[in-house]
Amino acid sequence: MAPPSVSPRPGAAAPPVVPPTRPVQTAPRPPASPARPAEPAGAGVGGGKPAPSTRPPVNPFLAQDPKQKARRLARALISDLVVYHPEKRQEGLRNGTLKDLFNDEIKKSWEEYTEQVGQQVAESTSYFNDALNEILGDGRKIF
Image 1: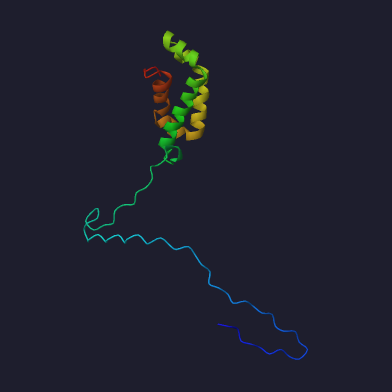
Image 2: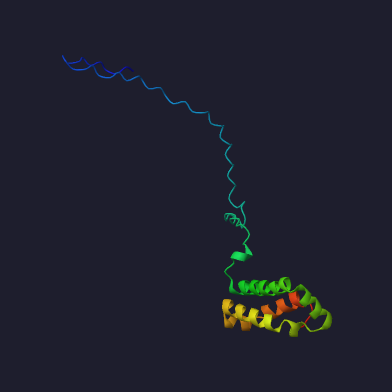
């Protein structure tokens, strides 16, 4: 449609000519996927209840459960002892002197553990001793 014509007034400049606008062309859309048929009543999990949503697996490092955090911390602290003192550990396992050789390191790790998980959790669980036996003691009941 052409813009209406306006006659200019005497001595006035002619109005600017605006070219007609064209519709913007877009890329064609892919065909829509077919609709999913509805399930009949009672066909879902639990006889008509909607299926539970699937949650991604919980990352154990992000868990908020205090006991799980305490267990994980105990294992991390004791694993550090093994990583930083491999020869000392082998000597202690070989000679049966693991407790004596790691006495200072175990005390420092216990203090750190207790500070982070709290005295009540530290004393009411066996996570720290379990980690000592499993990791530092190579599965032997030493601590």
